[in-house]
Amino acid sequence: MGYAQLVIGPAGSGKSTYCSSLYQHCETTRRTIHIVNLDPAAENFDYPVAMDIRELISLDDVMEELGLGPNGGLMYCMEHLEENLDEWLTEELENYLDDDYLVFDCPGQIELFSHVPVLKNFVEHLRRKNFNVCVVYLLDSQFITDVTKFISGCMASLSAMVQLELPHVNILSKMDLVTNKKEVENYLNPEPHLLLAELNQRMAPQFQKLNKSLIEVVDQYSMVSFIPLDLRKESSIQYILSQIDNCIQYGEDADVKVKDFDPEGDD
Image (cartoon, rainbow, N blue to C red):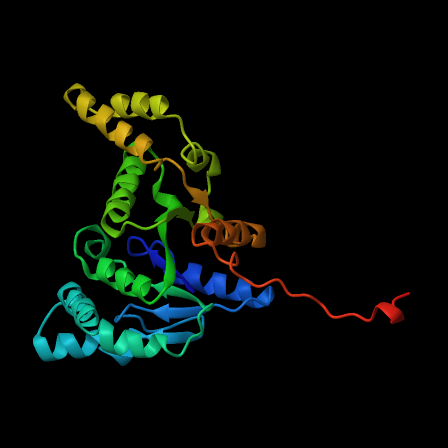
């Protein structure tokens, strides 16, 4: 059985930085992971790229040949990937062993994980290839400064959760860049009734029923739980990795290694 993280989130939420830091952390702890680039517009990487969608299709080529803009061109590239799952992806996956750990660095277009079925079909293909997959959803903590933005982020994450139907770990990224950490910490594990009271204060009275329904949805799906990520702290990266490993049952099927010893030579 293989293991995989699907790293998604809005553009600029720190997905590639997360992948790079995760790779460095695993290298330090002598653990092997493979980072896969699924962004056809990516140019520079701070980690070794194990698989690269640009070997299949390039955004620059699509924009030049088809006259599409950046967003339309990227969607075309991802649909082309979907059409080539049985060929390109299957062939690439054959290079990895059953217990290998892959991390897929995805583009930031929200359509890909909200309503377009490309990533849904991608993860279903991985699961057919006997991969346990977890979604890692990154949200920039610098924008979580009030309850309205927090609820907006929860709704986007919930949309991905419903669309992809996979175990979900929600991360507040860039905590090392936040100046007022207390503002953000109030939203790490808030009480639903406090969220509702704050939301009602900030919005017009005619939205109170809508506010109540939104908070109920967030609460029922346990979407008010985010894990902060501070890249300056190895313990922060390790904690998040352990949460993801638990979701995909990483290491549970590993064989117990018995060390040979000589009882006669044992002091």
